[in-house]
Image (tube, rainbow, N blue to C red):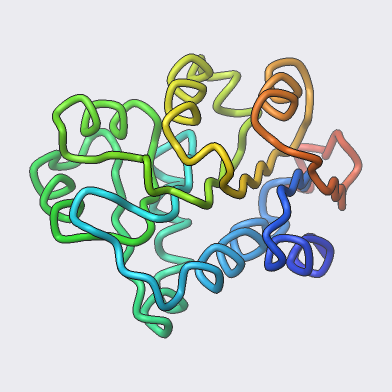
Length: 192
């Protein structure tokens, strides 16, 4: 349902605010739109065109695994940038030119600070599990990263809840977002 609800808007380039519980299919909801809208473009070294920010290394790997077959089919290169893995290998992937970067905020900031990545060419930015990023204390890094992407670019924010800090992000960074909610705001732990 989240894909059916959001894809027409995200493919049209609108800012999207999507709420759905973990496991509801959000990854393809934003991922297919990002890949479709980026297809046919080539990234310069260290200058990705699309960015997916996630709170954890595990989620970054899940997103990368889910999108890799689709990215290959449209000849886009994905780089995964997360803590706890070789920063040298990640820097090398960015130098090689990756159209789409899936990243945790801390490691991406480290690579930017080292001069290995610039976000000024990112025209599509996704925040996945934004509420979890807020809960984990990543908001200062997230806002610092969002301040570096193209201001006129498309932004998609997906979250299980839209409270407190998430609402602040929406007001500050999304322009006239289309809002889609496919789940009750509180899902029982058993259903997750």
